[in-house]
Image (tube, rainbow, N blue to C red; front, side):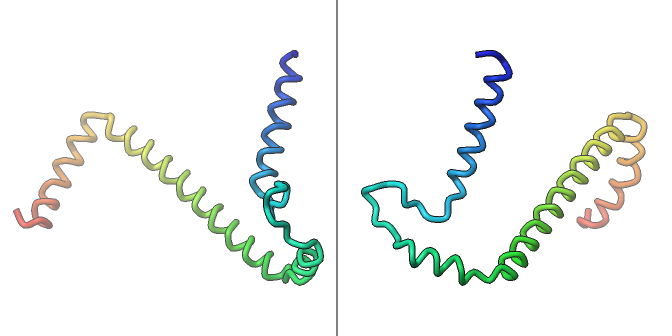
Length: 107
């Protein structure tokens, strides 16, 4: 099996795994009770898709916002580390911040 075939196989396995984890009703096992197909069809036909879209939109907005915030925090952390890696800047910040910190905590 060459490299391309291995990648294709891995991608297929990953997609199948993801699809398997997102199943709505697990009725593939013969030892489990099955939900009658008529009930599933009726439930499917009664889904309010506007509510589904509203819910999915809210969840996606939250995920996008969280991702943006996390990326911004990572950038700020990197910037702060870069700034504080300069000895003179670090000393200047200490000289400015320590008196204020002592005043705030009452020392």
